[in-house]
Length: 393
Image 1: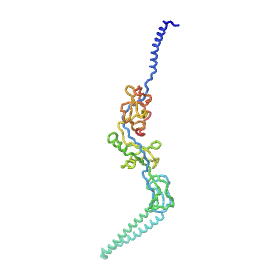
Image 2: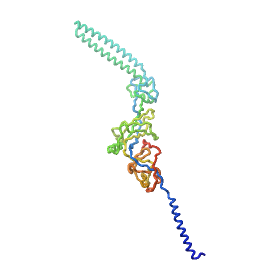
Image 3: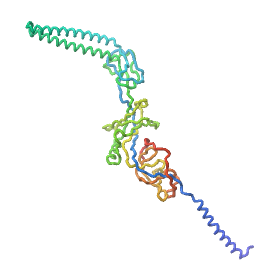
Image 4: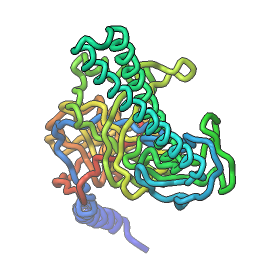
């Protein structure tokens, strides 16, 4: 049994022990406190960025020619290879030329007869001229000889024209390519009767180098761009310097850039769209008429724009974008922003940020609003691809 005097002594010892343990516990808690998270930050700068729109379009041939017969006759031979490149004036078909050769020979004979009559009339006129100078012939005979020569000259010209026409028709028995391009399938076969005044098409040639890309844009969007340029919010690119690229269905880019040719002067009353046309080199024949593409076109330039890496964007619970801004006291501020278009791996910031501020790029998931951070300069892994573009948010 403990005595009554031992109980106070025990309480005194326990109190002393507790006083010794309390500092040790406080020191342990201080040692367990987490250091501020290390984050990568980027100091924002303003720069000029293009206003890029991606619009639907289709490839079209620059020139299309229907091959037609210019004389009537029986088709004897098809010369071209279907689906190949043909040059202008290459022979494509041959029509039976025998009838046309006979007509040329007939026209040559008629011309020779007219020339003989012309020579005779010229001699008669010379004879009447000599007789008149000696007062042997009357003026009526001289005038008659002059008229006969004029008629003979006209007959020669007429027969010469008939001969030229016969020779041209003989040349037309060889149906030639009107343009350089890719010829499609033969629409007629040997032995068929073709006519000069019919609507029969023998083949179709399409020139696809260069190729056109016809695309459409909302008239409202186009007017909004023009108003922004007029108000000084955007700058118009210099003539012939607007970048035009093609995007295929798989997202890949066509290797060669194009140039904008024109925008239609009218708006489609049914769709409210304006048609634009761009031209692209197509030596490899990768672009085929009718192919669906998307045309990425730079239509304006935004001066003094602020951009942030896409990886720095943090979405709130309701999906709104925000970033963490690194303050001077090494704390992080959650800043709501308004995004514009995407340029490669960056977003254009419409509202919420200014040049000179620093935003957290890497490590944002470890940051708490108002919490301490250990900022480090952010180094991009690779240059941003300025040709990419995403819809406006």
